[in-house]
Length: 243
Image (cartoon, rainbow, N blue to C red):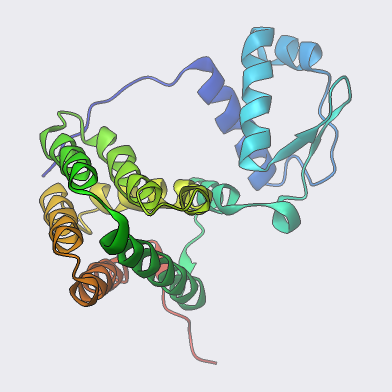
């Protein structure tokens, strides 16, 4: 059993959590106008800098919208939300991932990763391979397991950078929050272990080194299928009920 380090939340994190709770619980509705930031800080007993920083984070999450020197409103996050909004909703509420959503995510991930790693087989130099190996070793040696999701994401992002097309890493960056959420959730809930994750990444590296695209495709799909099979047994997955 893995025990994680416990840390206290900052005032900004507590503010973000509270406003997010109010939005997702319907206490703040889409289109509602928030009080001016100074007034909000006074009402909640916070420093103005905390409120300013928290509102900026909530905008990035897709829950608030604002323009310079204008009011702050609750964003229509159901229409205009992004992948980070989805991850925040799943993480914060009792939302679960159903068959359709899981199938879509698996399809996107398989298409994206097979393409990226196939290109890596063509483009990666030995120096690139050694840099990827260094990332895996950082994951293996990390004292705090909370660091592993970011290291794993960097492994995929760096691989995309080594493909030689400047737009590939930008595309991976689009799904950053999804990668971080699912890696963290999978580690915390025993869907896969740090050891399995590192071994999978080492296998991918070896196929890059050998420039074996066919074996790479199989390894990518095997990793995704292993995660899929385990995730379906977790509390975050819900089978669709037949009518």
